[in-house]
Each structure stands twice: as C-alpha cells, then as structure tokens.
Length: 114
Image (cartoon, rainbow, N blue to C red; front, side):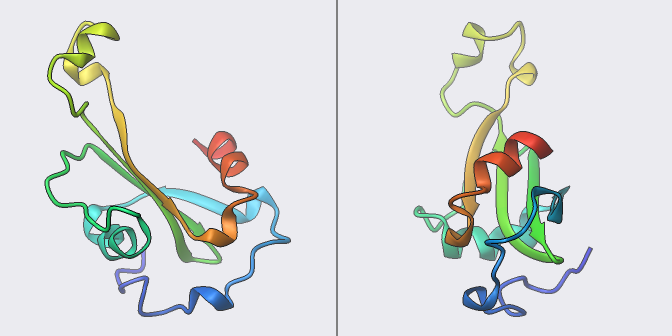
C-alpha cells in the first residue's frame, strides 16, 4: 500500500468516477495513520482524536483513497450488554467519510464490498 499522504497526490476535483462500475472500487484494511489527514479534511467533525479504534478501512478508486471507515468499541459504557455477551463482540462505526463524488454509489459499494 502506498504510504504517501493521500491528500498530497490528488486533486479530488479531477477524479471522476461517475461512470465507474462497483467492481472498480476496492475496500482494503488500512491504518489510522494512513487515513487520518483524509478523515480530518473531509469528515464534518474534522477530528479523530480520542477515538478508540479497532478496525480501519480505506475505499480506493484507481489506487486513490476516496473514502474511509473507522470502527471501534461502543462509545457509551455498558451499551454492549443490549447486543452481546461481551464488549468485544460489538463494534460501532465511528467515522464514515467519502468524497462527495460518491453520493450516488457509496451505499451500493459498501453493501457489496463489506
């Protein structure tokens, strides 16, 4: 995986995936270090500080990072008891961010790839 900052290598306005097929997108496990700048630039909260993180995925199109998903333990204490026998059996989506060019296709990509 390319370790270069994904924001420095691409002008997102120039990336056009409107006619792309769902199979053109790739979801890969990655690290918070790889997606941090992307999430802090494009997510409304502009922040990943303090997140308890268990899994991080990147959404790629033509090797360009265009989305990120960060999962972690539930944010509210003891909420997991409603859903499982132990806290490690429950995970929560902490951040989901994608470039606006994906508004029409993001739901399909996530449902088919994850």
